[in-house]
Length: 110
Image (tube, rainbow, N blue to C red; front, side, top):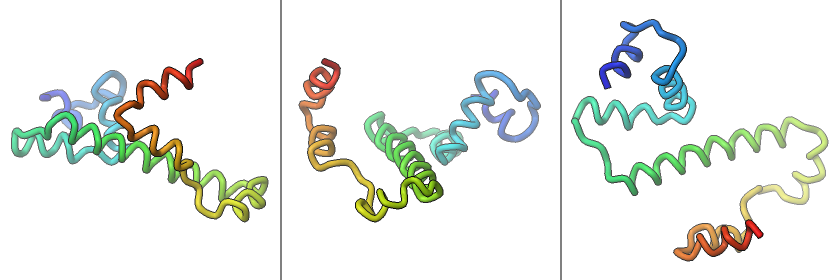
C-alpha cells in the first residue's frame, strides 16, 4: 500500500514494474476510487460488490472502444444501419447472468 501511495503522490518516480502497471490499469478503467476509499476510510467493499464494479467498468470501456471503432470505420456503415444499437443477444445475456453459466462455458468450449 505504501508503494501505491508513494507512486500516486509522485514521491517514487519509478515508471516500470508492478505498482506503475496497477496504477495505469486503475486509471484506464477509472477505478482509482476503490484504492482511495480504502486508503481514506480503511474500508474495502465485499468481494462481490467490487467484482461487479470492476466488471462493469471494464465492460463499459470495451463497449465505448468498440462503438468508437465501428463508427470510425466506413466499412461498418451498412452494419450500423442494420444494427443501430449494438448489444449482446438476449440468449447470451440470459446465459451470462444465469447461475448455470459454467455449463454454458463448458458447452461453448466444445
